[in-house]
Image (cartoon, rainbow, N blue to C red):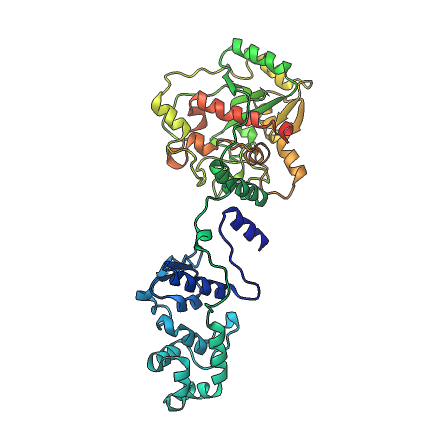
Length: 468
């Protein structure tokens, strides 16, 4: 209950309480005060007891629910108020006094069911009139039940009647809709591990301008640039590495790094500075491939397909059919789709294969144990690079393992969740980059510039250790 109150407070939704009284009576009082003030009221509940409150200016809304029950949204007003129980709102308490309600410990009159209760109310009206005419009721069972259990009926009516006279403070101005506290919501959602909601709240929260280093993501597509990037990496105190892979079509397990091809590597060498090494990018063909993106756990399961989320306890996320996610960009097209639409490339420049002689300097950097390296889910990157002919060494820090050590009970150790929590930074999702469903663009067909920014962001975000 405390958590619910925290959430409502963050949404700035007023909480009306009165110690010693039920919520139904508080609602009934607020309805009465609102009608007196000339304000229309909608009571949101599926509880049949609230049928008694329906009158001109007062509606009842059953919001419905999914699942096996599949209850659809239903509005109740004066016009259709008698449909559910068979009696008008002013007779609901009399009807409920007769049938009772075991879920609320309302005894009712034993032997009188829904149909008989509705008939009695229709014929005689309110409860006291029904009891007064009990001796003349022709049917034996309801007649004897009413004569024997008259006091139960009166007690039941008292119990089901919603009060409207409680001393509840009523200030319409304080009930006006207010802007939610998105910063507080973000913190609550992160704490409760509602990751998709946390990202939404982070997007809507007002951003305080913070001085940050200029982002410098460089595409390394020739040997001269590679030499410069490697020199810069060797100068850095620690570097962060991210790999992007493409699943082999025949692979029985989409998350297997040993049955995938290396598309690219990103290496971050400082705050906002990273280098992108493309190996297998190609021009967009318009078809879809079996993509294996973020199998290393760079994104949380909130970006995964609902049916293919976490694999083997890691945060391997697949983007074959990304799950529903709130778009943060007003344009419905993905980043890659917009770039292809506006300026479709006519050629793609890749580096030679990683196992080629020309790439020896990069292989040396990756296998140099004296160069300290930070990764997210080191096991995946280590195996993916081993499959590409490189023995990754010098692993100094794994953000996923660190997250597990700090909080092994959390549902996700994805880098996007960690970045949101520790860096207050919302990362680009795979769906944002490549789209989803039938419109998904395979990662190796994304414009290199778009793939570069996405992958370099992964590498740069691994600087969580310094931020935390």
